[in-house]
Every structure is written in C-alpha cells, then in structure tokens.
Length: 335
Image 1 (cartoon, rainbow, N blue to C red):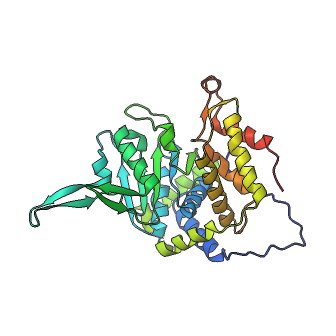
Image 2: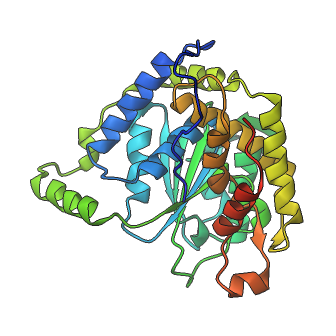
Image 3: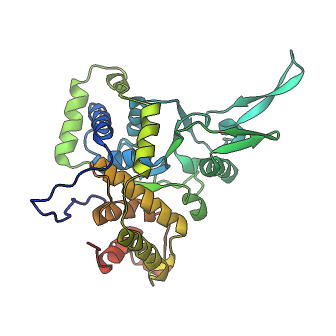
C-alpha cells in the first residue's frame, strides 16, 4: 500500500500563499506523466515514485514480476528528460570495468587513456541488477553513493543529475546474486510493482491492438531539459518542514529499531531519505510545505528495503510493509 489521499484538514476560509513558485515544476511533471501515459497504462504509484526520485536526485530499485512495464517505464521517463541515458543489462559474467570503464593503451601517444563506461551518464537503467556477481554490484553501489570513481589515480565525477533505476525479478533466483542488505541502503526507494486490474488489462490489450509503431518509445517526446530538472531539485530542497514533522520522522525511524518484529531497524540515512522524499511528494502535490501524509506516503518505499523482518515472523508471512503500517498507525499524527 503506497497511495494516500491528502486529507490534511484545512479551514475553507483559509488560503495558503505559496512561498515557493512550484507552478512550472507541476506543469513539467504533468507533461512527463502525459507522455508516459501514451504507452503505459496504470502503474501510477511507480511513476509517481520515479518522479519523486528525480526531484530528490535519488536512486530507485523496482521489483516486480516480468512483464509489468518496469523497464519500459524507466526508459520512457528517461526519454522525457533531455539528459544522457545508458541502459546496462546485468549478467553473471559482467565485470566492474564493463560498467565503469577501463584504461586502454594508445599506440599513437604511447600512453594509457581511460575509456569511460556506460555509468557515465545522467540516467542509468540497470536491468536485473541481481544477475551480476558481488564485485560488479559493489562497484556499482560505490559509484551510486560517492557519485565519482577513481581510476589510475584520477578522480572522475558523475554528471548531475545522476539517477540509477535498477530492476529485479522477485520470483526467479536461479543464476542470481542476492543484493546485500547493507548495500540496498544506497537506493532512496524500493518500489514494488503489481499486476494491473481487469480494466487496465483491457486497456493495455486495446492499446497494443491499435498501435502501429514498431517502437513504442517513438510516441514519447522530451518535455524537460536537464537544466530545468536541476532547478526543480534545488526548489525541492527549500520545501518547508515544520519541527514537529521532523520529530515525526524521527519517531518513525526510532520505532523501527525498537520493534519486536524487526531484526534490523532503519539507520539515520533512512531519516534523511524520508525527509528528502517527503519534500518531493509535497512538491508533486503543488505545496511548498510537507504534511504528515507526504511522510506516510514515502515511508513504505523508503523503509521496506532498509529493515529486516525477524526470521520467525517472516516464516509466519509478516512483511516489512505490514510492520511499517503498524508503526505508522501506532504513532500519533502531528497536526
């Protein structure tokens, strides 16, 4: 469960004057949504979390069964923004140099030259991240966190914005390498993608029947520049968060550490991630201030990969999402 209606009570006679002009940001995001909607039916929660990650400049792990539009949604999102794009298919034989780059000897200059790998882009799509061995995953997570690499004593910084969207399949584990829990912390969100409902399934089939394009992405146009996106990210950092909401975030995180059903609670990095994500959801809603509903909406995707359910509870079928829901229900919502 990731969707919450904004039910913040407001006095009908009170109008909030926005201190930050978010109209252009909202218009751009609506254009992005409409472009993606030319191809994708439903999956509103995944798209909204991807947009929040864009505004937060944070990485996303998308988990779902094959065929629920994980990869193509990320590709479409990348196409709507005028930034560099790379797609990397992870396989068991993939080496760190295959993604980072390698030094090549130049016969003309008699010197080694560094040839940059596909990670040197602004928007990186990694398919089936759990297919590559640990050393390749480790190299990726390092550059995700540090946003730079050092090769032959030379530091290379990643372009900004820098967003990694990774996908993985939750049902097939043959030939895969489980992502370490400590490394999963590098992702701002873990988004679970489910099946469409009957109405959406009919719409998907109808759209495919009417489609005459060989490549569905041809229908999608760029609607946002890299400079615009960077400006929007700067705006989001200035979203107002009241002190009682900062305490609310802290209470949620501390409760994960004290919960008897969890073997591992969330770290302070989770607090910062929840704060950043809540600001992005507020901006998407057109508000320059965070509400408790923004925090609750972000909590599931921020926490589900950062906490570990106690083994005995996991055997009983208890999930991280259910425990997060219990924690949110137990804490009094500040108003």
